[in-house]
Image (cartoon, rainbow, N blue to C red; front, side):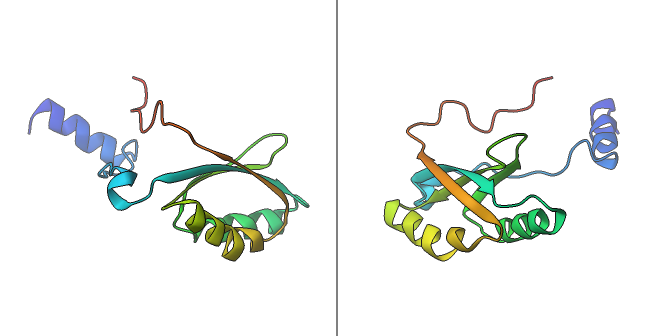
Length: 120
């Protein structure tokens, strides 16, 4: 086994490498609409936050969900086919997320940096 292969196996064993994936162009799948959604919670007790996070994790259009310090409480990165599909997702899934006081959406105009590798 080469030194490089040994190092790779060690990184996998220690979970420094968490997995492998293909980077797919969203437009190739018809997902050309992207929104960033800022979420402010009504209350921030443990059960409410865990319920919100569990519900968010089940929505496949949410590519990224981050809990933030301060206000807002969460940032969601969402992709859909178009504005009509986003509206439907908003009406059927986002509007019923538990514990939400307010959501503010902004539309992504252009990806400048996306899926960049971690710095060495």
